[in-house]
Length: 447
Image 1 (cartoon, rainbow, N blue to C red):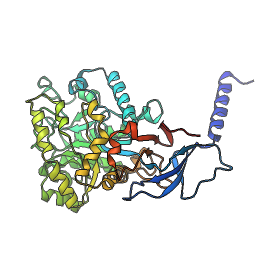
Image 2: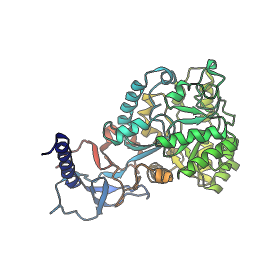
Image 3: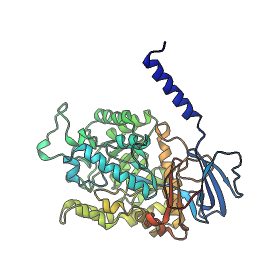
Image 4: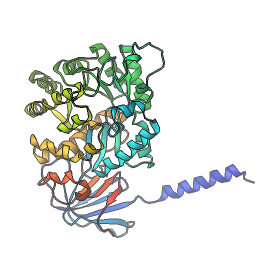
């Protein structure tokens, strides 16, 4: 006679077996033109079959469904099917709260706020983000498990900084730091971690990798938002940076650094860092070095409104405008030296500005063609994500529309190459949003 536990186990096994035998969900996009994330033109009229979470068939001819399980059919009617957008510089936990709220509000509340923002991020067509600092591990897990709605997240975990560096938001009464003493609020929440020697850096890097970091983020120079971090300073020593690189490479992944100035960028490259975030104050010899070493530049076209997060007359606001002034020169150098350039937004402390995420992508057409801009935010950014190697939580091809790629897809009501400004109004112009083969938005009638 079976015990109750055995009966329950047997029922669970039968339930699992039944679900395991279910055929994958099919979705058929008919009569679409494709922007594939690589080329500069749209295809002719095509038909695309998604099986489960991957693109199964792309065909010029209609795809017969005889003998296949029932599929959801989406009539494209000549609209554009393109890869989901990728933001390579995002802070999922830092988009909406003010700096003061991050240091004082309840952590549970902050996570709920971040979850609401994640859903909005996906509805803007950004199906993947590279999170370069903040306690986003729990949010990522909730999204991956279907508990919350949002983009794929490639998390860095806590920003690793030095005493007085960008990301050190401690107050004066919390200094001096005593090794072994209780950690501060910023470290308790996992927002940032202070490390002041190569050994401390190794520990902090390994802690983030233990929690699931796909890449590691250090602040190699001064920053805008941190009140005790002038823009011109270089923070980590080369030995400290090298310790981070070694620890990350032991796990098969890479280090990216926040850096604006030539000194901070060049020191990071000497230590083996593979990606520079921002670079807005770099000079031509530094751009040439980035090109020679094959380093990535993850940069942003900041709007002046980003300075509104800081009070008028504050040093943070002044630093913001100093950075903004370097944008044109930086991107001009990136084009001149054909740098491996990734698109990101780095939106902080502003729900209102986050709603303009697509508009910040469109700003890149001041320097690049619409096609080049779209390629950067899809296929190119996906190449940067792939640098996380076996730490990649989403094995498969992202950022492209091709057979075998992961089905992160947008159906655009129009031609975004001819009119990239369509992406500034995602509520109207993104008629279908699919991530991982699941439809999260569909305002078209379907069979």
